[in-house]
Image 1: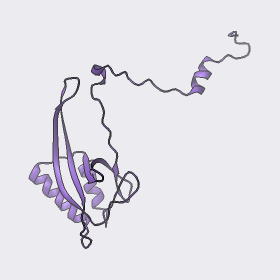
Image 2: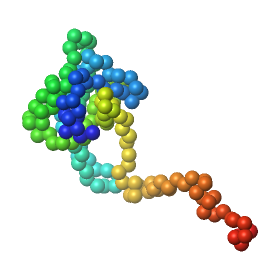
Image 3: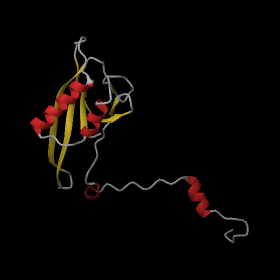
Length: 155
Protein backbone atom coordinates (compact mmCIF):
# COMPACT_ATOMS: atom_id res chain seq x y z
CA UNK A 1 0.00 0.00 0.00
CA UNK A 2 1.34 3.41 -0.93
CA UNK A 3 1.49 6.43 1.38
CA UNK A 4 -1.21 8.31 -0.59
CA UNK A 5 -3.58 5.37 -0.13
CA UNK A 6 -2.99 5.34 3.64
CA UNK A 7 -3.72 9.07 3.90
CA UNK A 8 -6.87 8.63 1.81
CA UNK A 9 -8.12 5.80 4.06
CA UNK A 10 -7.25 7.73 7.24
CA UNK A 11 -9.33 10.69 6.04
CA UNK A 12 -12.36 8.36 5.90
CA UNK A 13 -11.92 6.79 9.36
CA UNK A 14 -12.98 7.77 12.87
CA UNK A 15 -10.55 5.35 14.55
CA UNK A 16 -7.38 3.54 13.50
CA UNK A 17 -6.78 -0.15 13.99
CA UNK A 18 -4.04 -2.48 12.81
CA UNK A 19 -4.55 -6.22 12.49
CA UNK A 20 -1.68 -8.72 12.65
CA UNK A 21 -1.46 -11.60 10.13
CA UNK A 22 -2.75 -14.03 12.80
CA UNK A 23 -5.96 -11.98 13.13
CA UNK A 24 -5.10 -10.32 16.45
CA UNK A 25 -5.49 -6.56 16.69
CA UNK A 26 -2.62 -4.35 17.76
CA UNK A 27 -3.75 -2.92 21.12
CA UNK A 28 -5.77 0.25 20.55
CA UNK A 29 -3.43 2.32 22.71
CA UNK A 30 -0.52 1.88 20.25
CA UNK A 31 1.61 4.83 19.17
CA UNK A 32 3.24 5.50 15.82
CA UNK A 33 6.67 6.40 17.16
CA UNK A 34 8.36 6.89 13.79
CA UNK A 35 7.43 7.78 10.24
CA UNK A 36 10.48 7.74 8.03
CA UNK A 37 12.02 6.99 4.69
CA UNK A 38 14.28 3.96 4.57
CA UNK A 39 16.74 3.68 1.71
CA UNK A 40 18.40 0.35 1.03
CA UNK A 41 21.40 0.48 -1.32
CA UNK A 42 22.76 -3.01 -1.93
CA UNK A 43 24.28 -5.52 -4.32
CA UNK A 44 22.33 -8.70 -4.98
CA UNK A 45 24.04 -12.09 -5.24
CA UNK A 46 24.28 -11.66 -9.03
CA UNK A 47 26.31 -8.45 -8.69
CA UNK A 48 23.54 -5.99 -9.60
CA UNK A 49 23.53 -2.76 -7.59
CA UNK A 50 20.02 -1.92 -6.40
CA UNK A 51 18.21 0.85 -4.53
CA UNK A 52 14.94 0.44 -2.69
CA UNK A 53 13.01 3.07 -0.75
CA UNK A 54 10.01 2.59 1.52
CA UNK A 55 8.13 4.66 4.04
CA UNK A 56 8.45 3.12 7.47
CA UNK A 57 5.87 3.29 10.26
CA UNK A 58 6.99 2.03 13.64
CA UNK A 59 4.11 0.93 15.87
CA UNK A 60 4.77 0.80 19.58
CA UNK A 61 2.52 -0.67 22.21
CA UNK A 62 2.95 1.49 25.31
CA UNK A 63 1.32 1.24 28.70
CA UNK A 64 -0.35 4.56 27.97
CA UNK A 65 -4.00 3.49 28.04
CA UNK A 66 -5.40 7.02 28.21
CA UNK A 67 -4.34 8.17 24.76
CA UNK A 68 -5.41 6.95 21.35
CA UNK A 69 -3.93 8.00 18.04
CA UNK A 70 -6.68 9.53 15.93
CA UNK A 71 -6.67 9.45 12.11
CA UNK A 72 -6.30 13.22 11.70
CA UNK A 73 -3.25 13.22 14.02
CA UNK A 74 -1.56 10.45 12.02
CA UNK A 75 -2.29 12.33 8.78
CA UNK A 76 -0.60 15.43 10.23
CA UNK A 77 2.43 13.35 11.30
CA UNK A 78 2.63 11.85 7.79
CA UNK A 79 2.37 15.28 6.16
CA UNK A 80 5.08 16.68 8.40
CA UNK A 81 7.37 13.76 7.55
CA UNK A 82 6.68 14.21 3.81
CA UNK A 83 7.84 17.83 4.03
CA UNK A 84 10.73 17.39 6.46
CA UNK A 85 12.16 14.22 4.91
CA UNK A 86 11.20 14.67 1.25
CA UNK A 87 9.11 11.51 1.27
CA UNK A 88 7.33 10.65 -1.96
CA UNK A 89 4.44 8.28 -2.61
CA UNK A 90 6.28 5.12 -1.63
CA UNK A 91 5.18 1.70 -0.42
CA UNK A 92 4.65 1.38 3.34
CA UNK A 93 6.58 -0.98 5.57
CA UNK A 94 5.45 -1.34 9.20
CA UNK A 95 7.67 -2.35 12.12
CA UNK A 96 5.97 -3.91 15.11
CA UNK A 97 7.42 -5.57 18.19
CA UNK A 98 6.55 -9.25 18.62
CA UNK A 99 9.14 -11.75 19.85
CA UNK A 100 11.50 -9.60 17.78
CA UNK A 101 10.94 -6.60 15.54
CA UNK A 102 8.75 -7.74 12.67
CA UNK A 103 8.54 -6.04 9.29
CA UNK A 104 5.20 -6.11 7.55
CA UNK A 105 3.57 -4.88 4.39
CA UNK A 106 0.31 -2.96 4.68
CA UNK A 107 -3.15 -3.47 3.24
CA UNK A 108 -6.67 -2.32 4.18
CA UNK A 109 -9.89 -4.36 4.42
CA UNK A 110 -12.35 -1.48 4.78
CA UNK A 111 -12.11 -1.46 8.58
CA UNK A 112 -8.58 -2.37 9.68
CA UNK A 113 -5.13 -1.73 8.32
CA UNK A 114 -3.75 -5.22 7.79
CA UNK A 115 -0.14 -6.00 8.60
CA UNK A 116 0.83 -8.48 5.87
CA UNK A 117 3.70 -10.95 5.92
CA UNK A 118 6.80 -10.27 3.88
CA UNK A 119 9.17 -12.85 2.43
CA UNK A 120 12.81 -12.77 1.43
CA UNK A 121 13.66 -13.63 -2.17
CA UNK A 122 16.66 -14.05 -4.42
CA UNK A 123 16.70 -11.21 -6.96
CA UNK A 124 19.23 -12.90 -9.27
CA UNK A 125 17.91 -16.45 -9.60
CA UNK A 126 19.15 -16.68 -13.18
CA UNK A 127 22.73 -15.97 -12.02
CA UNK A 128 22.62 -18.23 -8.96
CA UNK A 129 21.67 -21.38 -10.82
CA UNK A 130 18.27 -21.54 -9.19
CA UNK A 131 15.90 -23.12 -11.71
CA UNK A 132 12.74 -21.27 -12.59
CA UNK A 133 9.61 -22.83 -11.15
CA UNK A 134 7.93 -25.16 -13.56
CA UNK A 135 4.35 -24.23 -14.30
CA UNK A 136 1.93 -26.39 -12.40
CA UNK A 137 -0.66 -28.28 -14.43
CA UNK A 138 -3.72 -30.05 -13.23
CA UNK A 139 -3.80 -33.77 -13.85
CA UNK A 140 -7.13 -33.39 -15.65
CA UNK A 141 -5.49 -31.07 -18.22
CA UNK A 142 -2.72 -33.58 -18.94
CA UNK A 143 -5.10 -36.52 -19.21
CA UNK A 144 -7.45 -34.61 -21.51
CA UNK A 145 -4.63 -33.66 -23.87
CA UNK A 146 -3.21 -37.19 -24.06
CA UNK A 147 -6.39 -39.26 -23.83
CA UNK A 148 -7.56 -41.73 -26.38
CA UNK A 149 -11.06 -41.68 -27.70
CA UNK A 150 -12.93 -44.67 -29.05
CA UNK A 151 -12.14 -45.03 -32.71
CA UNK A 152 -9.33 -42.45 -32.49
CA UNK A 153 -6.65 -44.90 -33.57
CA UNK A 154 -4.38 -44.40 -30.56
CA UNK A 155 -4.94 -47.85 -29.02
